[in-house]
Amino acid sequence: MSFKNAVMTLALCLPAFLLTAQSKAPDNWFTLDKAKDGVQGTSSDQALQQLKAKGKKGQTVIVAVLDSGVDYLHEDLKDIMWVNPGEIPNNGKDDDNNGYVDDIHGWNFLGGPGGSVGHETLELTREYVRLSKKFGNSNGKNLSGADKKEYEYYQGIKTAYEEARSQAEAMKTRIEEQFAKIEASFTAVQKATGKTSFSSEDLDQVNADGNDELKAAVDMSRKLLAQGMSPESLADEKEGAMSYANNQLNYNLNTDYNPRTVVGDDPNNLSNPFYGSNEYIGPDAFHGTHVAGIIAAVRNNDKGINGVADNVRIMTVRCVPDGDERDKDVANAIRYAVDNGASIINMSFGKGYSPQKAYVDEAVKYAAAHDVLLVHAAGNDSEDNDTSPNFPNDNFEKKGLFKPKTAPNWLEIGALNWRSGENSPARFSNYGKKNVDFFSPGVALYSTTPGSNYGNASGTSMAAPAAAGVAAIIRSYYPELSAKQVREILMKSVVKRTDEVYKPGTTQKIPFSDLCAAAGVVSATNAVALAEKTPAKKQKTAIWRDAGMGKNVKVKTKVVTP
Picture 1 (tube, rainbow, N blue to C red):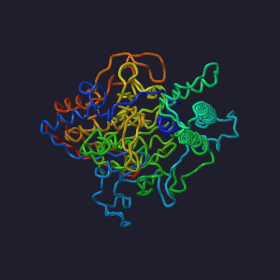
Picture 2: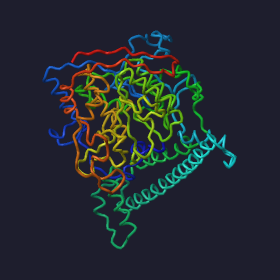
Picture 3: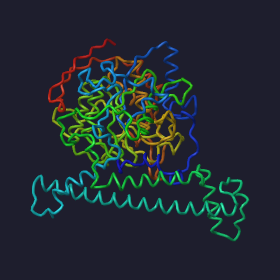
Picture 4: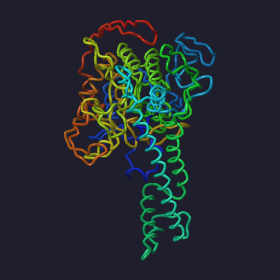
């Protein structure tokens, strides 16, 4: 995850007092139905009940989670992890000859002989380092043509990097100052009450008349208690917040940091996709494990939560570090998922720069040629994706006269709050009437976390897998429909919203329909109803250039009788 797209990380790492206070979301709200349950979830519970009542039986579909890693031993995930049928576990051989040794549940493109990449730099930092070597001592006056254009790009990169570094340093200072105030308030209240641990009732007994400092301390303590903060949790809250700030400065924005040597590959060599390891969890699998649970945590097993979809096998493909993912890893992760049978790929990550976008585009085309649906998070910066870049995306960098300009197998997802009305778009969510397709539950989703644990997280990172889960229901119960058709069904079946809402990150009200192309919110019940009436289409033979493998791949025509 990038500095640009850091709100989701902030929501996980910063204490509640630094975020807008919210009451508790309904349990498993992202699977609920507005009409039946009173909250605008995906309606997947209702949809699956209706399918079962009709005697419909679904086929197993593979959903690839391109992320930070997945705890494949989690009690609510271990039974639905993809198992490579062509591989014999732990024999040190590439039994299925796919180029990856012992890839039982997926692959880790961030692993290698030296370990596994945890922290990474941002793409902004990497571009700044690369271009500084070329233009650091130049004033640009004697440059022309492509060099002059690249120099101008470097100037923008330089400004953006310096601003990001300055903001990170300022954030660290603000966190330190805020915690100093909290510690002082708690100390004052503890002295006034004579208790190291106190309740709101204890605060009611404090006489602060004539003592403005004590009154302020009581007021702050009362607010913090209401948000779940206490003297007992203070140390952990501070550690989490400071850890995030320090990671930005020590890793993400550190021009001297290079963790890639542990992988053993050349990240700029795009011709070799065969690197990595089968270490599926990685240094921190919180994000990927949470995403996997939203999609398909085992339903109705009296454990933890219910995922959106049933009949799913989760394939884990690790390509997202704490920092910005590399284009090479993203492209190869997409190809790996496609080649090993995924029909849906969830991508809950993003960044503001993509120097090797053409390589990623080829992988997206490769997925389209193999009838694979890609679901991507719109980002967490309260920005308009129609005007601010968010990568990867479905707009191809190289647009030929008679070639597709956008990917027909791509969904871009914004985040929905569990609250109704004007506050329903998540305040952090990116949006875009052209480049964001629709909104999906993305605030306070309770899902699986490493070690057979469970926890809440917010972000478009959560909204994308909720939508991917709905897509998995359609691909499972209506397998004759193509990825393009499934995309169209999800777009056309949204619950339309015509009301005015707060534009994310502002107090300005705009029509919800201005936030996304489909002008609405994902609905599994509506999608199932539309899928039921949608005839399959004959899929044309497609030939795409497979740049990664250096050969043409021909996809056979799929003929399905409606």
